[in-house]
Image (cartoon, rainbow, N blue to C red):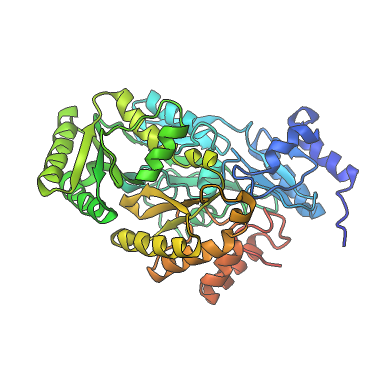
Length: 477
């Protein structure tokens, strides 16, 4: 049955809220907002609304509730599971927070920053740096991703090991509910035991319970000493042993420990401009180690040298370099952060964003590699990520010369193989990218019935008309 389009008079009522100059109507202007980065999902929408205030967001959702109009919140459109893309009905309106990009307040004494939901992550980092503070969330997409989306997906990034993900980096929220009501929870308190923690319901909810329009974020003193090392290793098991030593030696100064395979280095040096192999001889696996200290540069240097000396003495480390400058530190991180993009020129890629207990990473990689290559001979496995917090991006590039559509058609059955191993190790099928459309049905299959029922009860309570980002995370149809 065809779904009727939204009446023109209803559309014009939405336009009137934000003003015609703050609406995208032309299909060519809307088109980039209808598809996500991997091209897996493409939707339809007649309008993109760009409110300039929390009150305008409230008015939009009030009208949406009255008219039964579905709303899809969108910030930087950098999500990887289709959570920010409308469906195909053509009835869903996109609400973009790009105009709501103010730093509302910053308090270096209390170590907090208050920002609009549409503030670009890099701008928050820069504002914190301007008062000699650090906002530690760091992502490859930090120049375009926005705080509301970072919170809605509970983003992790490269510094989770030391600072936690967005749930740990947020003290309070301002949220507009599907009814248009505004919840001002912009509390600046580290201790507040006054009932249910409503904040945590919205963080990670992917816009299905409301629109995050403001946030109180935690800041930290800027590190004084910072050092980055890159080492070659024989296996993930050796990387795990090195991580254990680094944790014992550096404690909270260990801010990053990233695992990368040889094929990932080959892809980045082949396809990413300016990237070169840091070591003279190839190794099967690599670790990028980041150390930040609060007292002096000498302490960071001493720690990294002691770690590498131990690694060479025990035979764990085959080769290694310590960055000699800030530029070299950035170059090493750029290589790691470019690894996903470097797979694109190699053809189709089947992605997994999984986590397992840190000590289970070698077992996971061994089991998954055997199962995937048995199911798909010639598959090129590029597994990399945050060994320190158990999050691996288990990406599979198509066999050389394979047909890309035929390869991608096997996405679901390869996911089932990998995720089955993850679940057998008490892991998670989504570590930091969220559920969106991509994993919604799988989530309903793998979680206990009571857990899914509780999620649906929460969704129905907040959004009984199912107008907030429908079809994402959890289905209540």
